[in-house]
Amino acid sequence: MTTLSPARPAAAGAVRTRGRFSPGRAAAWIYIVVVLAVTVFPFYWILRTALSDNVSLPTDPMSLLPVDFTWGAFERALGLASTAEAQAQGGSGASLDTALFLRNSVIYATVQTALVVFCSAMAAYAFSRLHWRGRDAVFNILLGALMVPAILVLLPNFIFIRDIHQLNSFTGLLLPGAFFSAFNVFFLRQFMLGLSTEVEEAALMDGAGRLRIFFTITLPMTSAPLATLSILTFINTWNDYFWPLLVTNDEHARPLTLALGVFKQSSPQAAPDWAGLMAATMIAALPMLLLFMVFGRRIVNSLGFTGIK
Image (cartoon, rainbow, N blue to C red):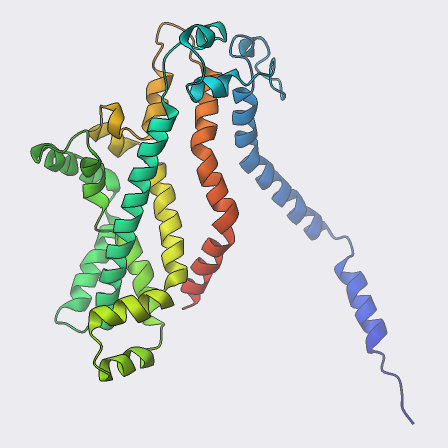
């Protein structure tokens, strides 16, 4: 005779227990909501200011909604408004060639990302797969670079770029950080150490060289961390401000982040064009927001996987 198992009532009770209110669950949800609000509110305030009229903005600075809604700030930021129209809307009349500065930022961030990630991958392969005298000592010295504040190398890098006459050029922007990143090398080396060597050993026995193994076997196997580092490097380079401020004075190589600061200081005798500045800031931040929305989960998963390895 078959007897019924009491598993179903127990499971139902477990479901009811999981859905039951508890102070800890409520506190966790409150914490998540507060953190989300603190994170999202600055972006909302930027958008609210960008959609406001710059003349009317001081009349109601604490309003949560745009003050006298208008697209004029975006027109000024994109260079679609004439000088007279910009001044009538409360702007300074200064020009901001967003398309040019956006192009400069794309070139700077893309080339820098490609160079530093590729060179870091080659260095990580040498530290994880090749056996040569002094390898561990050199790697330990490289790790020491992680403890050196970036601001300490700004002045030597500036003097070097000045001496080779590469100020106000993309070469001057790219050269100091294009071929070395201690964090990227460490990140990729830790991942490569966890990869199986059987496929590479089989390729060596078949006569494949190290370069062929690196490009056809190792790089495809490290596509996830390479994508993560590419995204992080692109974002850091896109947001870079101080180094472009040191080496660029001309518009043809000035990135958008630096152009925003110049735009803010373009009318020292009048009130800043806060609406236009926030519109330009939103345009500059939009690519990074889209990048995080599309690849955010990949970044988290790759970091966690690499940490487990």
